[in-house]
Length: 117
Length: 110
Image 1 (cartoon, rainbow over the protein chains, first blue to last red):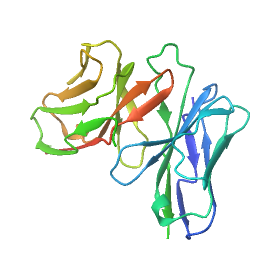
Image 2 (cartoon, chains in turn yellow, green):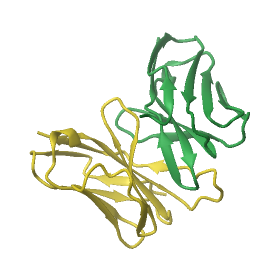
Image 3 (tube, each protein chain N blue to C red):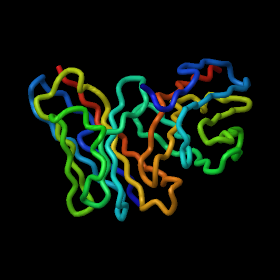
């Protein structure tokens, strides 16, 4: 079946503009995650959805960042008034409900590379 | 402050050599996962370790979870050029949330 898809794959924008990044998770996966990965770095957690609700938004770096999920499917990460420090790869992942507290495997999309000029 | 510290951050060795990558924390995790990421792609899960002291083998890769469930290691035997990539450890906090280390960028030279 299809994996996690993200669009666009690359986005170049000017400082101060708003951007929307889209994630299509694996069908039936209830959990959806957004991460940010700066060049050569690990993954920085941004937000997590369980269904359409976001029980953990603790990683959003500022109020310029927001995300929503509809139909327990597609999610959109919006960055308003982009800054140069927002330049990074934004990764989306989905997973089924964790059976235990051991954590479920997260299936990642290829990411959206955002460049803010 | 990085919750999970990986070392080394960069490692470049010759094909055929052995190597070990470490993932350390002062926190206890319910499980720990290792992912591998290639350029332009998202990370892909290699293994999940759940029990303190657990050892899992995946062909030439051996993963160990510390007895106290605070640290883990990845050992690769007879490295191959195809092992090149970014290796990420991730600790589970609760049922869903993962905390990632900063990664170890491994280069295997022919």
